[in-house]
Length: 451
Image 1 (cartoon, rainbow, N blue to C red):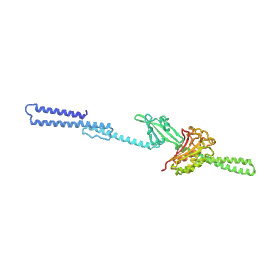
Image 2 (cartoon, rainbow, N blue to C red):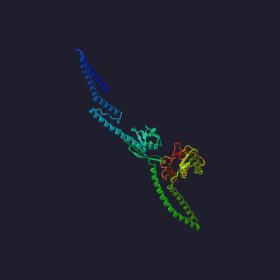
Image 3 (cartoon, rainbow, N blue to C red):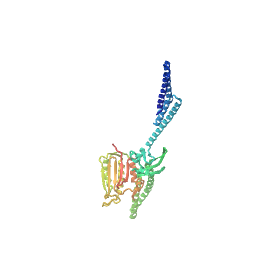
Image 4 (cartoon, rainbow, N blue to C red):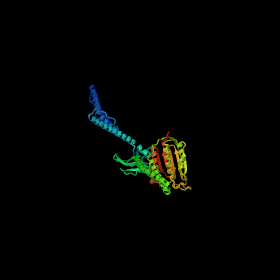
């Protein structure tokens, strides 16, 4: 029973006692009661009622008000205030309660504003943030992290351990120790600086990961370095070769006029070798002078059908099947046609060179479960692919494919993939290169769809 119930019980008992006393005084004595006795009895009843009202306002009402304040605290309602009850001690408690509610309300607003600000900051951050729960299960991720993972939302993976997810980047993050930072690479095109840290939340360490993309930074640093080296080498070699070539041509002419055939033949060999070296240096120099792409909407189907005869001719005399699967509704893509032709040329040349013995006339097993060497060019809306079943890309070389001057070919220069990377990156075209579980190597291009 509450205080109000006890007050009602006491009031009823008090009224019963007063009524019994009055009745006893009026009827217990000899003779009939006098009229003044009725007046006295009424006054006593009124006095008792007034006393009960005063008692209620001074004790029970303040107590009920404070009880209501306790209920507000239980409900975490810090925006409601209590009215004074005009009772000094109770009003002091009410004033203290209101001040405490003001502080809690202001603190709650500050925390909400701070959390909202941090949420907005994390959501807008270009760095990926992956937050785990205290049991090291996936909890949440910001939009940048979702983009790096190539997903729309982290929701399907919430509650999973990093090692149990199918996403390569998450599995690599699972190898980081607490407070460890490391550069991780999921494939030749994506490099990240990753940090595993934690913050205290309700007395427990709350782990999270910071992921910063470094692909473009490293690529730009490498590009500045190799372009400077190429320019220096090209300048020095060409200047030197120009003088030597002029002198050798003069000596060759003199030898020819004097009838010294052996000397003229030797000089011809030297000049031929110098010419090849000059072209070799020119190839490297051309990589440092790739023009900025001028992209315009182009019909994908018409463009690919126009360049396909030339791409097929890159097979030479090799026994390689060349299959095209171009959708008539492939739509338009925004490309620089001249540079894209060069990109496709390099991609198909690499595909052709993936067959080291493909010049034989008798098709044999290529090592990937296929008896016929084949290159397939596929085009769909927003997606092109050049696939071959030649030698696969080995895991140990995959991370170096787009490194300047790296090549797995004995006579390779290591500039073809660099040119491809440069053109596609400047054109805003996403791409992917790798060998699948089926042994097929695919170079995929992803375009933004033009309506």
